[in-house]
Image 1 (cartoon, rainbow, N blue to C red):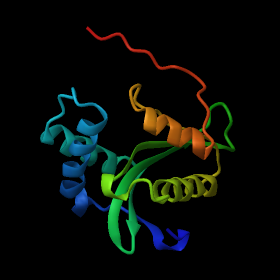
Image 2: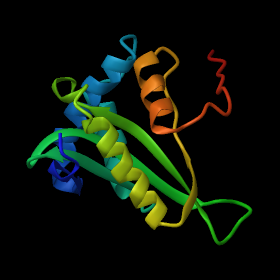
Image 3: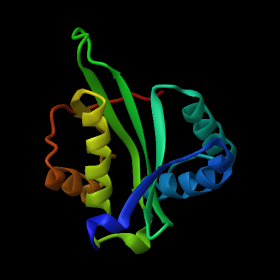
Image 4: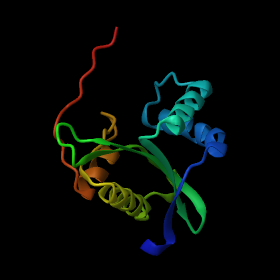
Length: 152
């Protein structure tokens, strides 16, 4: 795939139902035991669209949607002249994988974060997503900590 064939487009509120449906499938793919329901996906997407620090993007190839992601930009505390970026819910539809589309999409998102003065970019990978972990390490990310949870 040529890099110039990959474009990104901000997701607009009118697309929230379409994204919520895709988001639910994405969650089930990365965590089959997830108890997420369509209403949870819709509520999550609506809350992201209301948050001024977060931006949703479609990944497009030749104008056709092939993935999505969320970017968050916040001040990098205690520094006031720099920002921290976060890439979350990064998803390439299965039929578009292994074609460098994900890599190109990730690089475009990283460029956006650099343009917004982000000197640090974070992301999380689900613990059983070996493919995702290998992908982000290939892009250049390093494991810096383990996030642990205790659930009642």
